[in-house]
Length: 142
Image (cartoon, rainbow, N blue to C red):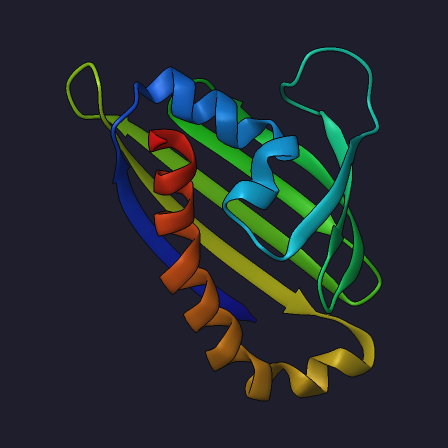
């Protein structure tokens, strides 16, 4: 399993940050590996909402919101033939205008790709930990 964590403070209220992250259409703004995001379920974004998204090197994911406690906890469960990913976000208000965002990512490679996991893990972990938080901050603070 590949695990990565990051934390950043964003100068926006917790509800605004939560809503931005929950809408996966925004993900390419803080995750350069994500693209072509389509909401597959009907209705407003919330618990059970399903998206499909392309992900560099890992193909198309089906991603479901499996934790939705606005504005504090958000989780995604994503699957494709090569890997499963569990992503957990925590949002903690810091006053009225700032939010501490924490993220934990767990990726489990499947099939033949699992043999490459030990080689891929340091690169994937480093990329997630060094880019996602700063990119989220930049997207929300412009």
